Amino acid sequence: MIGVVVLALLAVNHRTVNHYRLEWQELRGIHQGIVDYLAEHAEPGDVLCTEDIGYVGYYGRMTILDRAGLVSPISALFNRAGDFYGLIAATRPDWLVVSASDPTAGFLGSAAFTQSYEQVRTFEPPQATSWTFNLYRKRP
Image 1 (cartoon, rainbow, N blue to C red):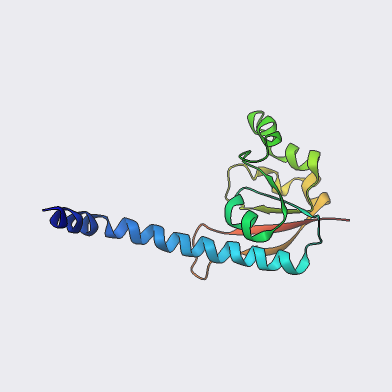
Image 2: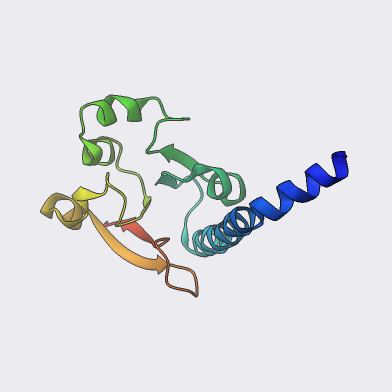
C-alpha cells in the first residue's frame, strides 16, 4: 500500500520536482561562474555584496555583505527604509552581484551607482531564463 502511495506521489509531482532540479542546476552553474571569476580577479580581503549568499559565500571564500540581511544585520536598516543603494553607499563593498530583474535593483541606473561601480561580467544559463546576474566592481 505504501509503495502505491509513493509511486502515485512521484507521478503527480514529477513535473514540479524536475522543474526545481533544472532550476537548481542553472543557479549552480551561474554561482560557480561567479566564484571562479572572483577567485581569479578578487584580492584577499575583498568584500562581496550579494543576495544569494549560500553557494557564493561558501565556495567563494570572501567576506560577504548580505543584501537581504540574513548574515549582515546592517542591511535590515536600509531595507526597511527601502534604501537599497544606501547599504552599498555606506559600506562600499569591492564587488557586487545583482540581478537587474530584482525588485531591489532600481539603483543600478543611478548616477551615484554608475560613478562608483562598473559592470565587469554577466552570468546567465545557456537557456534564456530569468536568472541573469551582473557582477560589478568598485571603481578605484
